[in-house]
Length: 301
Image (cartoon, rainbow, N blue to C red; front, side, top):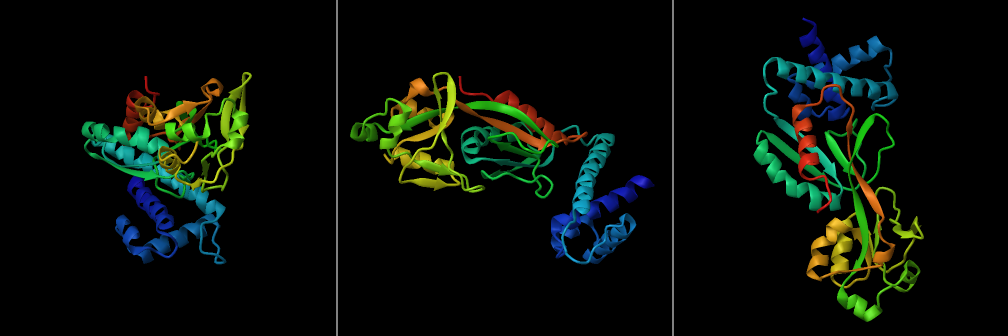
């Protein structure tokens, strides 16, 4: 019986890197064998493949590639077994998603109760972070990011182009005046957002004479890693901020915030849904992708 033997070997090779080479017994126990048995299986595999090394206790490049292939093969085997037994009639299992703070709070999280009502056998884990994720190292099924991935092995589908706007409170504008052109931002308190992953401030974008232009602005406030912190500052009169329109739409409609430099707007940043290429995608992942594009991945009308 090739399939059960392959499945056991594949599961052991899959769980050992996830547990770490310190042999996390709790996680390895998911395979139904002891850490010592897993170590022996990995040692035999290294000897057969000729990639054994004792100089360091971490995955080599060859081991990482093999692990990724085992992960995909194991997923395909599990899906085939479920289909053969009718187990895929209803999406089930744990779905793991990573999303940046603005998209998570204003787009993704509001949709999840409806998704769970439709698919109650799917449990959803949401990782709210602006950093990039490594699908080979981390157990995520999907990620949402504000740019296309550099890795060509990943699928990237555009969810929406999020319009950018510059906003402030009426009180701040009454005190400091409203800028009429982007160049006048030099005399204003421009709240900065800095990505924790690379330490870079996000430039502000404008459309000037038909061209998209990026501008560096200055201010006494910088929010590191949490985009929503800039919104809190601006709502309390801290200055101007450039934000995605969907994150401040309610405040604009209520008059809590006022848009400025509208004549230089029209710029946007994309939000992409990213996931690994797979011949056989788990039904829970496919169901969520279809749900997201049908119900939520569009700008407000």
